[in-house]
Image 1 (cartoon, one colour):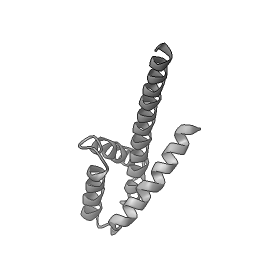
Image 2 (cartoon, rainbow, N blue to C red; image 1 turned 180 degrees about the vertical axis):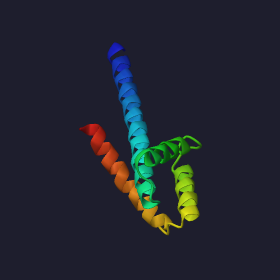
Image 3 (spheres, one colour; image 1 turned 60 degrees about the vertical axis):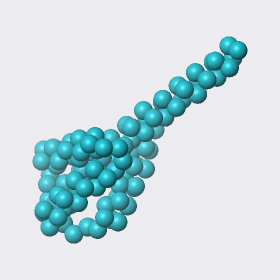
Image 4 (cartoon, helix red, strand yellow; image 1 turned 90 degrees about the vertical axis):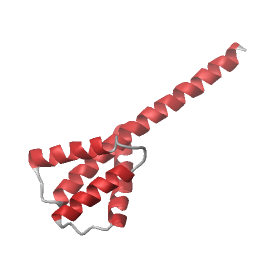
Length: 105
């Protein structure tokens, strides 16, 4: 029975590590997305960093990406940036892959 318990703990630890890694990747993706969106809106330097931090915080409002999408969509609309939701979602996917790669290296 001990080996079964050890296997179970091993699976639980692996699952916990994967969840932690995915959370970190999502947070990094949101920062990268915030920096991209800031550049699209003409922000740079400390303003871009502050905006990226706002995007990271926006993701904590609810599970999933809808809260981040709403924030960026509203900010783009307010600043006259005409990217479609498809463009933003595509960028989110690209940056998630990039964030995962950065965390692996």
